[in-house]
Length: 347
Image 1 (cartoon, rainbow, N blue to C red):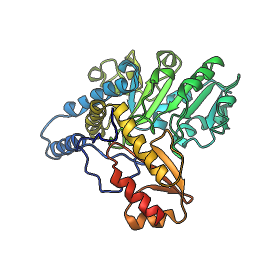
Image 2: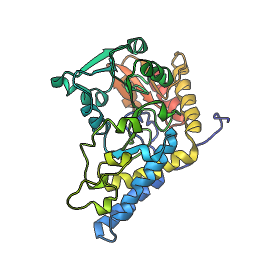
Image 3: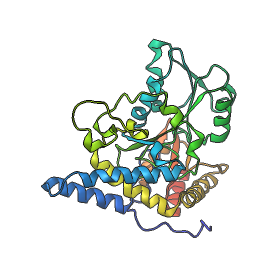
Image 4: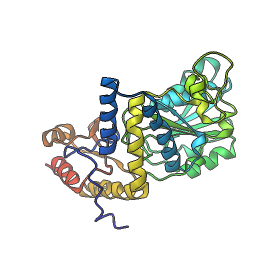
């Protein structure tokens, strides 16, 4: 595949200079149009809600294919911390959880709130993380791609080390899914917020929950949507939950899911491998132009004096943390975006 000449389909309308997908992704046209149509129907009461809800199952099935797992093992929810909460609540008293020392708190706080029953959250540097997976660690929790600096974890190596000590493998793949190919079945739990690289509205998310995990976890957020037949679970006893990961579903906010399904379908149609190659080409061109070594991530960081002021003057939208620029490149990013950002930072 010649990524240097590949042009993404004209399905986005970004203002030039958007290099901040690590904060939120931009919707492809099918997702945007689907949401507008659904909200127009809502405004006038033109239809019932079941059609909006059907998008949830469509999105679940595409997500499962994107990460190589069975749709029956995927639960839907709203945010990473909410999706991880039942897993954390099921930990035995006194359990030890290992996280990277710069881990985004959506994969830290759900574990840390159980300190009153002896759950300990231990931290390790990214460079020393693999060596910190030792007997006595019960959960190995980490981001597949770090939000702060774009560092890509070695999922296979970490999973193997965790299995060797009997630890649960919990991955926050929010900053990876949609651009980085990976095998979700290497983990026990994969939680993903869809509003970044999956280019979906904020408020939709997924969790791969391996069957061996579900046997240990109570669906503490269960409601009617977690029922074996949701439409037959509106009222009263007995408890009648789904036999698969749908028992952990959160009743969906309709409109985010109306936009999520077509956004994921666009990613599947293009192909994650193609998106990955496109994103890396642009990210590494950006690094090289600024005198940095190329890397393996669509999220890159560079230290440039007065970066925020330089980017703002040029109309470039990227994250700036403590003077360092975090730029993130996705399918709608272009060479012109790279040129404008480099010119601004070198100016």
